Length: 396
Ligand code: HCR
Image 1 (tube, rainbow, N blue to C red):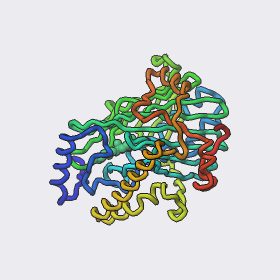
Image 2 (image 1 turned 120 degrees about the vertical axis):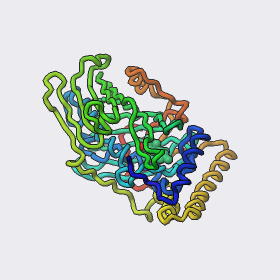
Image 3 (image 1 turned 180 degrees about the vertical axis):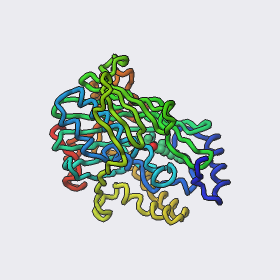
Image 4 (image 1 turned 60 degrees about the horizontal axis):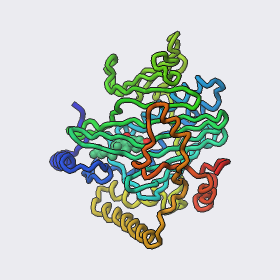
């Protein structure tokens, strides 16, 4: 049996939390009141950084002339992100934790500096009801940009099931090429034993504008290997699933091998043990804006760390009241909060076309709109939000 993360004195409160959540769950994970030991001191806006913790792998497709191999390198990069995205909290903290619920306008800004040069991250909470986080990760030197946004829709029956709504879009400037990445649904295992962790469900699809589709099937405990977090993946020309060009298999938390589907020879491989992540640099708290997550949540996080729940909830209330006052001002002025780096767009035909190729839609109604990074907004934000941190591209 899995070891329990529940402190012995909290066993009763954990079970009553599970029962209460089961009975009253409304689909919004952020509104769930969880016991203190399961609360994280990190906000969901920080999770956007999981997309590029190996910047050289993120930019690698831009250096490949062959479209088929580029699609393979995009798949490889995506697979390398899964460990950080879905299992890093469990590995570091002993179990999955409930992240801080970002407020509207909350920002997380940072950069990675390594062999790939400078890669910048902007993450912004663009909606509070429903909660939606948008991000843009940019490497100007290599002409690579990832942007996307996500919301979560959950249900709680015998386990918590989470459907991610939204998408990620990778752009390679040099080839005027785009890749639409769907987000996997997931569920939380280990709830009854008090050691929650994430398992991925079903599949992810990556559709390129150059005509390749990648499909990643998550099988939990692999039916052949019996190892957890197993997956298989294949790349094929759009609509030709039966004739793969590359196949991949392994575990997204450790190793995988990419093979030529015909000859079965290894074309690339990955081992998390052998590869270090590049640490993200974030400005010192003293230089951060009040909207930046670590500064905004600093006092709440410190109180949570000390186990002082009264102080944590007082600090949280200060943030919530400030937000309510701000919403009232906006209502009086009949305007809505002006997002700092992102804007809603009606102009997403390219996105829709890519989504249609894999039988997907763009669910704008579930994410309070379709969100896009705005270089024009970022230009304006450069002064208050530290020159050099923001990915400012050529177009508006
Ligand atoms: C479901 C989840 C919040 C959302 C997290 C997302 C989907 C956010 C976007 C990232 O790109 C990827 C990502 C990774 C996380 O695995 C996922 C979180 C896992 C748990 C958390 C729940 C809200 C926590 C539930 C609390 C339980 C343990 C009581």
